[in-house]
Structures are given as C-alpha cells and as structure tokens.
Image 1 (cartoon, rainbow, N blue to C red):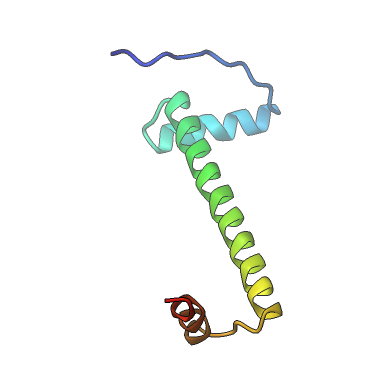
Image 2: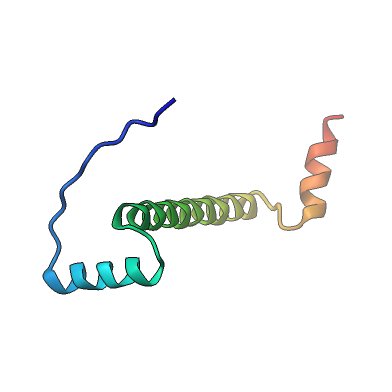
Length: 81
C-alpha cells in the first residue's frame, strides 16, 4: 500500500534555506527526508522533555508523602498484599 504524501510550503530566511540545502547534500538526503528526520528527532526530544518533567513531578509528589527511596516504594507496593 502506498503511503499518502502531502506537499507543504514553508517560508524561512534565505540563509537558513541555504544551510538546509547544504546539510541535505552533506547527509546525502533529499530535503523531504532531511525534514522528516529532523522532525522525528524534534518529537523524540520533546517526548523526552515531557517524560523528565513528569518524572520530576512524580519525585516531588513522592517526597511530599515521605517516599524517598526505592525501598519506600517497595514497602508501599507490598503493604497491601
């Protein structure tokens, strides 16, 4: 099955466009593939930032409840068993 493609037009400063074309050439990719790769990298980094933000939130909430170590977590998990 063929993947659907949508053509997009974006506007960037001419120096950025030139750098993008140079990078695509250096990476031996066409501009579409380079954009897809860059976008995938951006999404991964954004996901990582969100994960670490949630992790920090969880640590703060656990600290408020006195859960400071893995041992504390295990004690809570096995407490009701």
